[in-house]
Image (tube, rainbow, N blue to C red):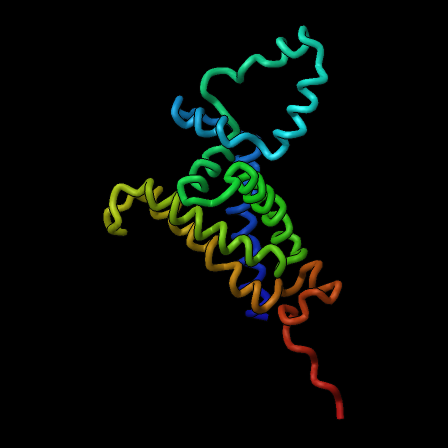
Length: 198
């Protein structure tokens, strides 16, 4: 029973961290410096080749109307992840940023339901470690924990949990109740089977 509770709590925490992060990356916009905008535009998009084909097929009048740039220097929030991926030397940073955001979004919901838990656990460990190292750590004024503000401590705790909690779920399954356990995909996490009589 205690094992099930710890697995359920782990899944809830992962959902609370990753699902809002995915929604924010996909649906929110934030401001970028002009130099960052240039880097983002140089990355292109995963569908850039298709967009070029469609662009060539448009009449000139419609194309001119559609080419109005986004207001100011605001872009989708996942572009911040793309910039950090590029700084880390990851190839195709914009494509990878979309992948990270979608894994956060779908993986966070899947963790809540206990669906494909082991499938999402491994990438969530990597994403959590990347966010902790490249997104959280640079925001801290000091590497010394006793100098952190309450907000800093909470941010570090959340992403540290998001990095470490998928590991026991990967090894032991989602526990009960979960869709994986009901369908046989979470056998290790469903508790010990009852001993056979005789």
